Amino acid sequence: MSSSPTAEVQERTRDALERFARFLESKDLRLTEARAAIVEAALARSGHYPIDELIADLKKRGIRGSKATVYRTLPLLAEAGIVQPAILAGESRSYETTWGREHHDHLRCSRCGRVVEFEFEAFELLQRDVAGKYGFRLESHHHELIGTCGDCLAAEQGDARTQ
Image 1 (tube, helix red, strand yellow):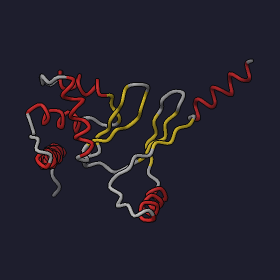
Image 2: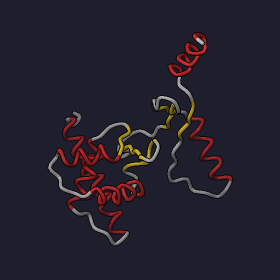
Image 3: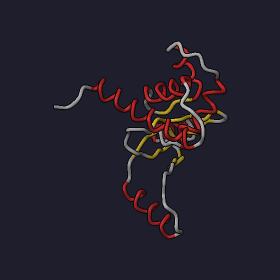
Image 4: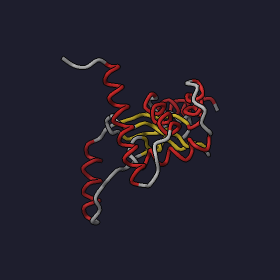
């Protein structure tokens, strides 16, 4: 018999908090209430999210933590393997929660910002080969392929026909 979705979410959160606490301890830091709340808010999100949305989530939960605390904590969460930087949009950086989720890469439209997540095993094999060739042990990676999506290409072709 499998556990309920709520039990799975609680277990995932507990495991992430334990991992983060061990990671912080290795850096002579501690898991504060604010940092734990940031972990929980990040785990509750899906997809890509700007930092400001995560801060808004914390406020909705009644968590009073400074914006600076969130900005300082997210790189630590990334280093611990719980989140990763996602799509860069101008000055604002987005993140996505990776803890307990399948790895994937991204296609991003440079015109409309649409993001498509994909998995492609050939990329995974190639990057391991490249890392090995240069004597690296691969620990993580982030692929973002940037181009123009089909909708934007179609709109562009439509605009060209009307000129």
